[in-house]
Amino acid sequence: MTSRILPPPGAPRRLAAAQLANAVGDGAYYVCSALYFTRVVGLSPARIGIGLTLAWAVGSVAGVPLGALADRRGPRGTSVLLALATAASVASFLVIRSYGAFVLAVVAYATAQCGLAAARQALLAGLVGPGQRTGVLAHLQSVLNAGLALGAALGGIALGAGTGPAYRAALALDAVGFLVCAGVLLSLPAVAPVPQRSAGQPRAAVLRDRPYVLVTLLNAVLLLRMPLLSLAIPLWIAERTSAPGWLVSALFVLNTGAVMLFQVRTAGPVTDLDRARRALRISGRAMAASCVVFALSALPTAGWAAAALLVAGALLQVDGEMRQSAGSWQIGFALAPAEHIGQYQGFFGAGVPVARTLGPTVLTSLLLVWGIPGWLLLGAVLLAASYAMGPAVRWAQAGRGDARPAGAGVRAGEAGARAGQEAGPVGGPSSA
Image (cartoon, rainbow, N blue to C red):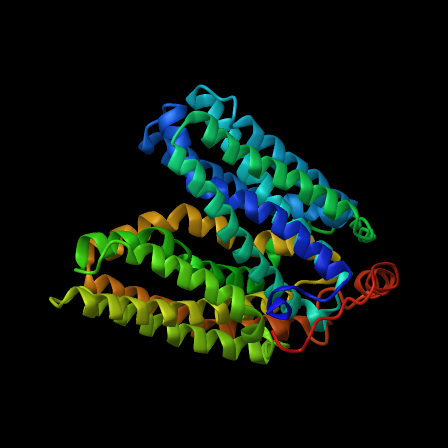
């Protein structure tokens, strides 16, 4: 069981420990933050939504320069500083009393989170060889889900108490988690920064890489699946089906448990761009099928039949989710040049805050207003985007000639060897 979740000893396991520390806190934060801001701080849901939309929009833009900073100054130090900045922004939630302070705090939080994601990807690239990265990322995703589940359970205790101190304790747990994350990241071997750019070289090289921009945009479309489980499907169950309300929780547990147990195995075969493209095509078919099954759950039928359809749709969805994650990890790293990997990962990772920003509005409008046709349209869009990834990746490959994958050059080769000597075995299993 642990081999499906924990990566091998050394740098990968320390990265997993850092991931677990902040995931536990994030799990508590996710389940308590909305009620804290409404019941304790006194903000309206509409104003919270506007603030969060602005915050993640700023964060998606900030990921590129912060990723470039990790390239220039070294990803370990940048990761530590951004983890500390995230902890400070979460801690500031405990003392805010006005809407202006809330907006400043959530903008700082989203910016630090997006930058931290890019810097940690650059750090992973410097410590783990190209052939093992997708497997290690699969382990980290399993650890993330385990941590979120544990944190959500702890947050549930705060929800049960329903008091200001209980909510603040949940948020304080998140701040402490990022402090622990910073300490674990600091214990990793340092990765040398890339050389400074030469005169005349564009500052934001990724924005001039049109094939990579296209790949990133397609990945952002595929990430519209993210708000499905947390927002769209619960509302769909409540408003459009005869299934029992408790099924919302059951589907969340099903998704989290499946990713925790099977993400590593699913990602194992995805070791090059050809297999990444194939994984995305299969993912697109699974997601399209899940949309059809979710749509059928709204037909007039018994509650148990609607529940069975929703469970079947959730199983197809999580299979597509795991394959899409594995394929996108491989593509995002393999097409990024070694000298700009932090910047490129910051841009590629912008799909997550974009999905968080646009996804709720798009999905609720599409599914709850259009109903069954909306599900069918969503499935068609996800299928088309997954198949379009193939030509986009080939275009990117053609523009790179015989360029090696990100991290296969001087920095990753030398730093990875040093990490192996200082931190023990780095390579992961072939099966993810």
